[in-house]
Amino acid sequence: MALVGCFIAALGIGIGVGIIIRKKVAESAIGSAQQEAARIVSEAVTKAESKKKEAILEAKDEIHKSRSELEKEIRERRSEIQRQERRLVQKEESLDKKMDNLEKKEETLSEKLKDAEKLNEEAEKIKKGQIEILEKLSGFTKEQAKDYLIQMLEDDLNHEKAVKVMEYAQKTKDEAEDAAREIITAAIQRCAADHSADATVSVVPLPNDELKGRIIGREGRNVRALETITGVDLIIDDTPEAITISCFEPVRREIARLTLEKLISDGRIHPTRIEELYEKAKREVEHTIKQTGERAAIDAGVNGIHPELIKLLGKLKYRTSYGQNILNHSLEVSYIAGLMAAELGADVKLAKRAGLLHDIGKALDHEIEGTHIALGVEYAKKYKENDQVVHAIQAHHGDVEAKTIVAVLVQAADAISAARPGARRENLQNYIKRLEKLEEITSSFPCVDKSFAIQAGREVRIMVKPEAVSDDKMVLVARDIVKKIEEELEYPGQIKVNVIRENRVVDVAK
Image (tube, rainbow, N blue to C red; front, side, top):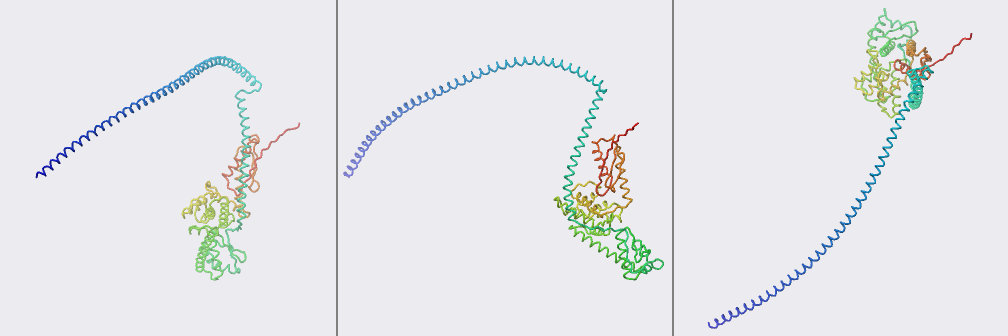
């Protein structure tokens, strides 16, 4: 126990000594640290003071530099302002001088204006005096002289206008004729057609004259039945071995001709047999009409035509106008219109269609009241034809103005087909009326003395009154006459208008 107590006492003493030693060491370390901290602070203060002095010096240098630059800029601006001031002063002095000069010029101009006014007054007096002298010498007043000058000017203008009209008309005519001639010539050369001239009668040959009596029948009953059923007139005269069928309606005449031929072949001629063979011939003609219409559409290269229009087209086989077969004419117009459309780059199919159908109304004008144009337009609309085709039908005789290229082509093709040699013939009465109408139109102008239609109406010679028409005005008079002929007269081809002004001098030797 005593040993343990000694050990504990020794341990306590050791611990106390250790604590005392550590405390001294710590105090010594703290003192060294404080000295080091004081040193670092001192060095930092010294460096800060040095940096401060350097910054102050740099700031002073910068301020000095900026002040120098600013003073330099101020000096430059002052010198520039001084220069501007000197220039302004010089400009003011220059403007003052110019103002002085302008004032002097204004004074000079005012003096000149006064002088000019005086001269103008003197000139007016002289002019007035000269006009009075001229009026006395010429015998004209001022107004009369003015009218005279205006008249001279009008004459000159008429001359110039006539020259220009002739020049441009000739130029346009030459260019248009060249182009049209090439297109039309090519179309005509590529489309050759024959023309058949039919009349309003058909002749049926007989094997012998004995058949005439059988056809007439007892007390004429057979011929009466035949005329009643077919609706034609039979002319049984002294013509050997022939009977003539007369009827204005060509389809009815064709049915009657077939009926009569079948009766002659059959040999049994009585009213009942006539009726049977008439019905058979009628069916045959209707079938032929349908086939003919279809063949015409195929030949023309036109598709999609309404069946009723096909029938009307087939009827044109039996229809003639001015001796020209209408179906052949329609096909020819279709070909020519298509050829010209191809040359011009137009719609060829539409041109052919319009050309084929343009005279479709002629299949109806024997049966229904109205012109062939009005009937054609009506039926084309009824069966839903193209609007351009309807317009071409309406315009192909110039009743309305042609507004499409197809209508113009159909007009031209119709005229070409009708103008072929032998294509048409005109009866004497209509021919004389046309010539009289031509002379009446040309004589209606007050400046015309006499007019003469020559060359079968293809030319008209007009004698004008020389005191009413000058040489220059003849061109304008000729154009007015041509326009009136085109508006009021229907004629084939073209009419040449010759205007003649004759001057005669008559004197008597005594």
